Every structure is written in C-alpha cells, then in structure tokens.
Length: 587
Ligand SMILES: [Zn+2]
Picture 1: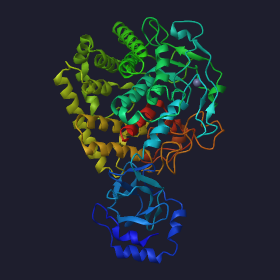
Picture 2: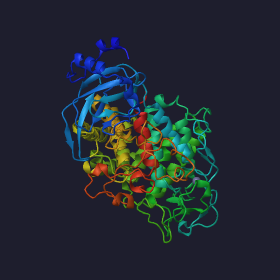
Picture 3: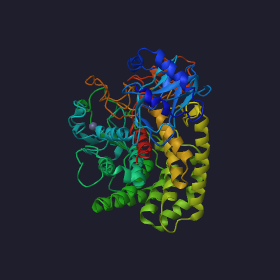
Picture 4: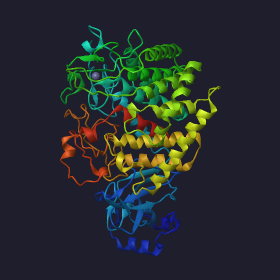
C-alpha cells in the first residue's frame, strides 16, 4: 500500500468522486486493508473477468445498495481509483436494481478488483492492451477440441484434455439414397453431442472465415498450437479447413449435399472414442436425397474459402470454387428441398422451411469471389426481401443467412456492384446499429438483448448483436458501435446477473458444467477450456429449467448444470460468433 499513490487518484468520469480525505480516513481506519484480497468475491459486483482495454470505457455493475466504490490493485490492495456509484436502475430482464461504476478514466495497466463498502469485493480483472487475446486463443482452440475422426490433445498446458480417434465407422443411411460404408472422417462435433450437421457447420465455418477476412492482420500472428501450426497458413484458417474438408466430402456426385452425418440417436454421456454407434450420412429419404439449405450453405462457404485460401493453397481454393459452383447449380435444379428427420432418426434436425436466404447468400458469396453476372442477377432480384432481417440479429443464426448475404455484397470491393443495393444494405444496417447501440447504453446491464432474446442460445444472440455492431462499424466507423459490441462481450465474460464468465476456464469465476460430453465424462476437474455456454433461456425446454421458480425473469432462467442442455450446451455456431466478437477486439 502506497499513500504516495493517492494524490494522483484519477476521478470517476461522472466527476462525482468522493473526497480524498474520506478515502484516507477510511484507509487509516482499516487495520487490515490487505484482508480485502482474501475476502470472497461478492456476486453482486459484476465485472468483465477477462478485463477492459486500456483505452476504452471501463464499467462495472453493482446489484446491491451502495454509495461508493474503490478500485484496488490486486497485488497489494492499494486504491488506485475511487468514485461514486450512479443512481440505481431497475432491470426487468433480471429483476435487479443495478448501479454503474464507471472507471473509464483509469489509464494504468494492471490487475484490479472493485471494492464496494457494504457489499464486498469483485472478481479480479485486468486493464491492459489485448485483454481478450487469451479468450480468443482458448475459444479458437475449442474448435480443435471438437475435431472428429482424429486424436485430439490440448497439450502440456491442459494435461489430460485429450481423446483417441473417434467415430471411424461411417456408413450411408438408407435415407441418403446410397449404400455401403462412408467414413467421411473429419469435421467438428457440433455441440454437446457428436453429430455433424451441414447447416450449422455452414454458418460456423463462414463466421470464422469472415473473422479472418476482416481482422486477418490481427489474427495472423496468433498460433493456436494445433497439429498444422507452422505450416505457413494462419492457424484460424488451418482450423477452419479441418471442417471445410469434411463439408466438401458431404457433396454427392450430382453436386447436392447431404444434410448431416450423425448416429441415428444420441449416444450416452460418454467420451467420443467410446461412442460405438455408426456415423451415418443421412438424407431426406426420397429423391433427390440432399437438401437445398445444406447445398446452398456449402456453396456459400466454399465460395468464401476459394478467395480466402488462394494465397496459401491455390489448389485447395480451386477445388473449393468448383464445389461451390456445382452446389449452386444443384440448388438451381432443386431450389426447395427441405429436410426433416427420416423415420428412426432422432438426432438434431436443423430444419429450415425456407432456403431462399441460403441461396441468396450463396449467390452473394459466389459473386464476390468470381464476379460472374448470373450470381449478381440472382442477388439483385431477391436481396430486398431480406432487408428487414438486418433490423435485429436472428434468434437462430444457422437458419437465417439473409444478413450475411447482404453484408458480403456490401462489403465487397468488386467493381460493378449495384450502388443502390449496397447503399440500401449499409443504411439499413447503420439504422439498426444506431438503435441497438442506444438501447445497449440505456440497458441497466449494458447488453443489447431484449426480453424476447433470452431463447435457446441467447449468449449467441448477444454475440450476434456484437457482430452486427462490428459490421456497422466497418460501414461507418463509430465508437458507439464498437463500445456497444464490446458491452455484449463484457456481458458474456462476467458482467451479468450471475457474475459468471460464460466461457470455460476464462476469468476467475467461469461456469463449470457445460452440456458437453467430453467435459461430462467424469475425468476432468474443470470443463474443456474456451467453450461458450448457450445462456439464459426463458423458453425452458429442459427439465432443469422447468424446475426453476415460475416467476423468474427471462435473463435468470439459467442453470449451470450438465443436464440443462437448453441453457448450458455448447455449440459451434455460437462459439464462432464469440470468436468473431473477440477478433474484433484484438489489436
Ligand atoms: Zn468424433
């Protein structure tokens, strides 16, 4: 503790810092100020447990009556900043009365905690440059941990987080229109289960490739310590390719793409290598057996891959483009083949009644990659139908590709773009982002989620709000967009009703019990690292949530239990949205 530090104390931005004399008196009266460091953190004080960028807004929340706060350095408990809490605001989504502690003026890198007299101390957090790099690293490595058809080992940093090769035995299910063995090794386990589903793979892989296209210079140097590291290709592209190769293998000779590869029913809660159920290529059950949404998704993702991988592997880029064109041609022939589980199959469905948005997305990505007039013609004929989808992110991002279709068109620098269409897309996105940013600022928890957004995967919806704000920030740079995007990340990393970091092994108080078979096999004291929880879900589609009190407000319908698949499952689609949001914060 250094009293000499006190005269330089910066004041809260609100200018309502309480008198220095009172702070000094309080310090002198506390015989064991160091004891603060050993006190149990209070759940009423909410901070981003990864931290706050040095040059940005820094806001903590207090959901208990209090007047003042002090920011203390973790190493010696010295007060480095102090201020007065702003008046409480009622938050209907949580039932909390929330006060804001704004210490944005702090410009001293370090590790800190908040001390709120009468309430307690917060979890620790950092203030520095690149406070989200570790979270990005772990969130990306989580994809490596989901790899199927290969042995996985997170290495000396995470001893015991490994499994031998899994799901080697594949075959065609009768619904696929084909027969015999079809191993198709590769891809990522989709979620808490071991299925691999084309449409969810589509949005997830595309989101990672977009993160690279937009934030590549920041991501290039980050090694993920995966088997391909050091091969000359950036690791985010190495990891995405693992799934792309599986997606490409799901394309039939006629260009159509099978909807999924999974066992016919979910296995028990066992390690991947113990799951002996055959991994079946599953189709629609009748001619043409492949589905339009799956095929259009492959066309879109492979078209992105064709431009992204070109500098690193021109042969692969060419193969991807060929697959994209063949897939597109198939959807022209079969524009409306939807999927539902055939009899006897009970794994994930990812049903989507309308593949028009997927086709629009494929056309937009193919045009951006090739410039072929036919793709733009299709796009310009149909894009306006999707404009309303820009007003708010979809609640399930895997079945609503309209926003990505529109954004990729407007982000393209290709000559010959229709200026009116591009302008309509930008303007609608900016209007939405302005409204979202204003709502986020006014929200007591500084999150973009509306009451109706607390659905299955609501944490993914929060990340998608972040993505929309970051895309708007590309169209017209605006600190309000960047700050509101980061606010959604703060929510995911601990500044929420539960004071939980919803990313495993990130922060001092991360959630512990994801619905994730490799984490729930009884072999590990902590879950596999870097995984995002689905989050609060007022629709309560599992027994754990149904047993919670009926009067809980929507943002509180969550339980950190393995059995709560409807609030605590992991999934590659919201994992990818998290990666995009994190990538947008790196420097
Ligand atoms: Zn597997």
